[in-house]
Image (cartoon, rainbow, N blue to C red; front, top):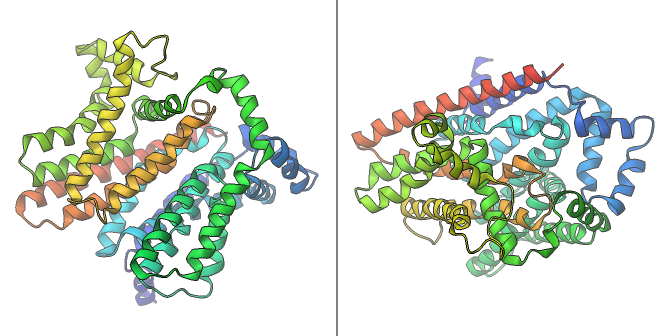
Length: 456
């Protein structure tokens, strides 16, 4: 019996099982009955789900599949949501491991566990636990799972018969959310082209998934409800949105993303910038390389993690922080003569450019650089929010795809760090590992306290 348990928990599966148990412990204390959860639950009580969700396609949203699942789960039982939510976070961990961990799964999956725990899960309470997780966490998890066929086909692995329907269902669910749909369309088109160049042919299942992804995008773009909601959101939340140019919206995506990172003290951004500093300082002696690597980490430390001390010593850092995280279009024709309005834009570009350059330094080339692709795809998923009038109303929950992209890049950098065997690197690895695991534990406790203190 013990031998079977050891075999089941072997090859990194123990860390994923621990992730499931830890998430189950968190969600077991949640009762999804507030905010949007309450609205959805009351709307389907005593009637069919379709009678409520169906008309919303014509007057509110294209998320028909997602909302149908949400209402179905709430209608069955809160325990259904608790179980599926824990499974979805575990699915995200499993998918990341399957996609990006090839060697030493025991150690790397354990580190992945703590990195996922660093993600501030309390963000999922913003519109109600069930509504927010089903609209963001579940599409993120199924999106990662729907990307596994790309890896399998690229590595020429065989599919098991039951995997086909699972990957299709994941594609349909994730494709029903706008940000994940864009991720899937971009990734499947890109790798379809690369596979044609590499093999001069395309796997039939790759064609099916690509068609489903594009079909999902068409479904979103042709939904009448999205246009009605867009107009209402502009009137209620962003009256000047219709006057913005393409470059304005692009600027909005950049500055609002950095604004959320600074405003919320994004631990995942801190994780990535910290691991990059550890790697660059361990492997490069160039002062220029080290300065480039340290800028993002110093930025978030001064403006977020140590802002109490920073503000007391340097009072105007607080004013600068307010300027960066302000919810507005930073630079307009009316204020372009004031150079102070350029600062948030330059600050945002500088930080993201330094991260990109550091990732290129770590993996040493642009070709076959999976880490830079993951970072750019995740960043683009947040950047496109600049083209939505809900960019500020939606808040930090729209960061989840970029946050998990940064978790993946952090894991990839960590694996590169583990390949180094000299004593200096081993000391750096040990210290970094302790810090990462400690932050993961404290953030998990923080989320647990949030749930216990906010639930009845």
